[in-house]
Length: 191
Image 1 (spheres, rainbow, N blue to C red):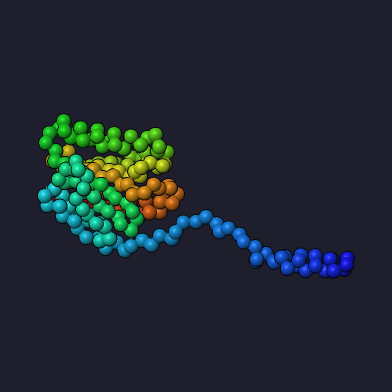
Image 2: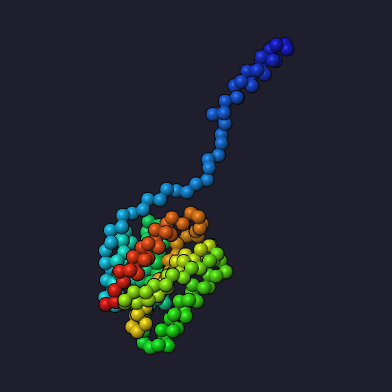
């Protein structure tokens, strides 16, 4: 009887000894991101007095917000679930320009409570100047900008993802979209 019990125990011990039969959880990871080709095309918004280049994978549509003004557009980055909200305004006088500059700054710095840092990158070209803001941390928006010629034109943009984001997971996509935003700024023409 002892031999039978010992034999049963030995069989049970050797039958369960292989590591490949153990179930182990997979490591955490993120999906692989396929970046679309950047075939640039010019978007001309004649009624709004400006144009710019963006990749052909984006969709440029009028802003559907009920209080949106005529020259407010959204650039939808469909593969990434992100939207760049563009607001264009004509400058009527100096006081209005200062109000737009102040409003833009307030829109960025209302995220200061959630941002780890806000980096201001100054933009200067022959046609306009402005600031490109990069917001690090768990903010609703990760990049905003404004550009103006200080006399006639003012354009503001803010990038939002259409879902709650994890900063680590969106970092490569954000870098890619910032390049698209800078392409817009670098190819911007007032009409």
